[in-house]
Amino acid sequence: MKTENSRVTIHMVSSLDGFIAKKDGSVSWMHSTDTYDKGIELTKEYIADFLASIDCYIMGSRTYEQAIELGWPYGDVPVFVLTNRDLKSDKKTVQFLSGDLTEIVNKQLRPGYANIWMVGGAMLTKEFLRLGLADEINIAILPILLGAGTLFFDYIGKEQLLHLKDVTAFKDGMVELCYEIKKE
Ligand SMILES: NC(=O)c1ccc[n+]([C@@H]2O[C@H](COP(=O)([O-])OP(=O)(O)OC[C@H]3O[C@@H](n4cnc5c(N)ncnc54)[C@H](OP(=O)(O)O)[C@@H]3O)[C@@H](O)[C@H]2O)c1
Image 1: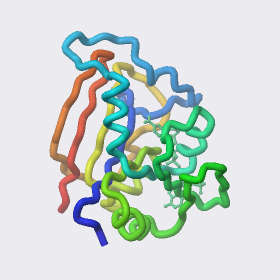
Image 2 (image 1 turned 180 degrees about the vertical axis):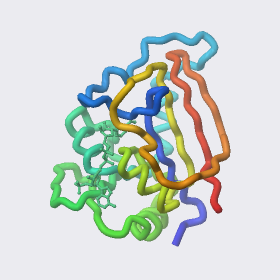
Image 3 (image 1 turned 120 degrees about the vertical axis):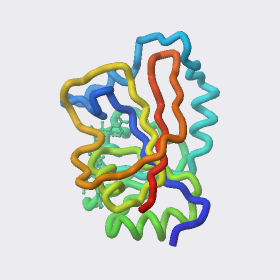
């Protein structure tokens, strides 16, 4: 059952038109060259503090494979990867999981980790929202329209009320929106 203190946050970087990846998979669009004078600085300390608060990550296998390719950003924090394939990793912190996603999140992850981050991709986001497994959505919107690619919210198929918890604008034009998912 759910640990009282555990929180599952869906986190994603998105274009303003709702895409989380370009068709060709390139990621240069994730580095903004814009300036917004009233925004706060995204310093190394800010990022380090923020990352230090995350107890584990959960992701789909495609997101995992891309992270391996681009350079592992998760340090030594435990990472749970959903897959139906027989994947292997040389990283001790990586564990591959399959089966009932609700059981995985509520029985395996919530009892052991307080701050759980679901970091992609679109397929897993859809499953988390449909099954009601997330508590928050944290979206960092970059100042760009991509026009095509992988949608963050790819026809979830259900309506979901949200509560806006926080908004932060950064000097590079990125806006972070944090929503609590209202439980029915
Ligand atoms: N902008 C951002 O912040 C951001 C963040 C993350 C990812 N992305 C982008 O998103 C794209 C990947 O997203 P995606 O939607 O294509 O894939 P994904 O959600 O990362 O991974 C999908 C895969 O996860 C596995 N999976 C999903 N649900 C499962 C379940 N219940 N049980 C077992 N396995 C399950 C399956 O793996 P198997 O096929 O191995 O069985 C499935 O093919 C990439 O292009 C990446 O660049 C962007």
